[in-house]
Image (cartoon, each protein chain N blue to C red):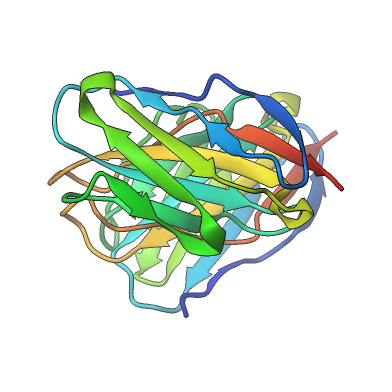
Length: 114
Length: 115
């Protein structure tokens, strides 16, 4: 069965610091990859997604992620975080061409200190 | 914009009660999902549905059942609530059955406490 690993459970950064959150998945086939964000008190929303093509994808609010197939990774990055980026971030995987069953990682809580 | 509405934000029930959590989406999505979210465990899929009257078990279906009598509504049922079912429950929907490339749209969640 596929699984998704997010090794950083809790990350604390100062404003303007650079961010990289790790995501690794364990499936050898073709996958579609997502990052979702959950701001305090709000519902999960899509941050960005990768289906095919350019492995560097850009999402909302200055976030980007790079798909590295050889490393089974889809790390999330942002050059300079803001206090408003404080949230929980979830990586997710769907098998390409299959049904819509998603496997989520355990999430990373990001706290940005002003 | 897709709207996924969960009937309650907070719910308190007693052990042994039968509990219904309701979810409605307004965008004619084929797929609907129920997750529970627990600290350190992320989102775990309980059940999902690809069509009316159709359901599939997720990763943790024990103690739960679901109902989908209409396309827009997906109900989660705790047959006999237990304290280990205290959690945040999230409903989600996505557009179509196949393709693997449909983002999910989430409701605000129901925080359920079983006493």
